[in-house]
Length: 405
Image 1 (spheres, rainbow, N blue to C red):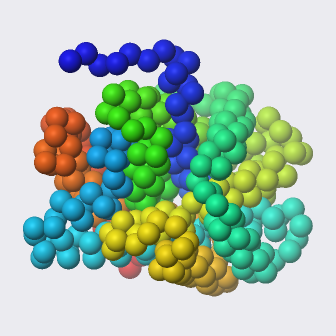
Image 2 (image 1 turned 90 degrees about the horizontal axis):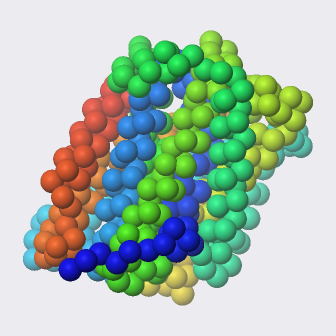
């Protein structure tokens, strides 16, 4: 049977769920992680960005494919597949729920901190005052109807603007091509394990796989539309990777060896293009990135838990609503601890990287089952790449934990 062909215009029009995911992971954590990576280690961790792009394309495609083919979310599919294996089901549900919840709380803390950092840089109001107030605004936003669909166009604009500015800046500063090629070779310089896992954790975000499956099944209703879903994944994730790589390369060129402790420090990399407007632009960028990520984070955790435990996926179910509330409140606690805001953001991304292998194993497992996806199961290459993502993220995550001690 021939695969339905789509015109370029139809493919471009189909962009949506993937852009939503990119809008989620291109948040304050990505800008902070990539800036610090470049400033501290030059181009040495560029390989981690490249690895992240390959990993996020493979994992998000698996999630989108499952949503389109089965017309179910990832969590529901996992529970249904393990129905006749109660012990394994209990183990997997517990691991996934724990990883998603803890990672979501950490990410929420980083999102609130990043937005508060941007507002604080412009207004001078302390971050510990702004973060709780912004957290309350997030609660209002996530109760305003179908927040995910209404955000897609806004996120597309934010992602495009950030991509243009950082890519142009990267070209202007003229990075050393030979050094860039060396940075593509995997190495972990001394003390860089946590930064490496933060770069991966800020791109391959565990709950984004669940959001993608849910969003994809709402967007496409037939396996014939898989080419559209794949185009959406490939283009969106590559754009996200270009933004992350451009931030790291620009910081590695302009800021190598400089300390990075504030938004003003991070803005230094944009001065070759924006001059005196660099600080306000980056501050507004952190706010915009934090808005998109912070709204999606609690919804992502709620969608996952709803799928795992059979709740309704809307605020009419009190458990869904309380999960949104709990993630935001715990995120506020993380944001107002008094630690350096950039340290909070980096730790949040690292936490997601540590939890990542659990989710990757679950996704690869469910999308490799013929009784779930039939002829649309993973290819051997996809299984191999997914397994590599799990192993590499596990190794770097363990190194990151050990480095804390």
